[in-house]
Every structure is written in structure tokens, then in C-alpha cells.
Image 1 (cartoon, one colour):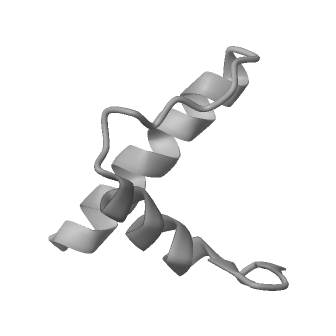
Image 2 (image 1 turned 180 degrees about the vertical axis):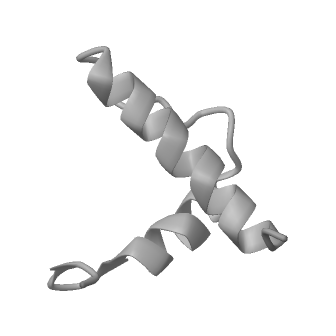
Length: 51
């Protein structure tokens, strides 16, 4: 079972990836700013992407 945070991450990253694949700037406006922040904090740290 996927927990809620993993589902949120998948939706945010999936949208960003789809936009980038279409050569567009990621449009994450369908998400609350706090949702984007939450997902990005799990993927990045101040020095760049998490390993």
C-alpha cells in the first residue's frame, strides 16, 4: 500500500515530469503550495537532490 505522502510525491513529480517531457516549465498550480513544498523537501536538500 502506498502511503499518502508517497501518493502526493508521485502526483507532484509526475506532473513536473510530464511538463518537462513536453518541453514546458512545470506547472504545479493544481497543488497547494504546502503540498509542493512537502514533496520537494523529500527530494532535495540545500546542496541539491537527495542521494
